[in-house]
Image 1 (cartoon, helix red, strand yellow):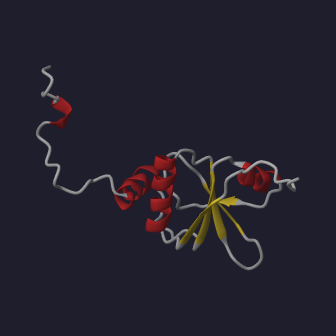
Image 2: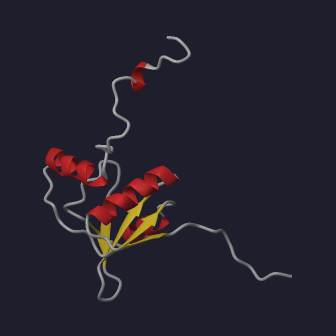
Length: 125
């Protein structure tokens, strides 16, 4: 391999859009996992630390979304009040979190909120 020869990059048309679009990944995930194309809740949370998911699971407050086809995550749904909300735990790292958020949006979510830990907040002085 010469300095300018990279076989992985040969025979590619870089002006073409990526086939790795969120909707394509979900379509194939649904096909391979035999899941129905069901909309997700309008509001979903990303819970990178998994604290919210663990609390909800520990208190039997969530159920798994039957149509979520992302290979690496589980979408849990709960109802605080009269609104159904989805939550995905442990989506760590910006590129992965963005992929999950894009898949949520492609599945019908209108608002994605990332819940992160900040440690203790104490009064100054």
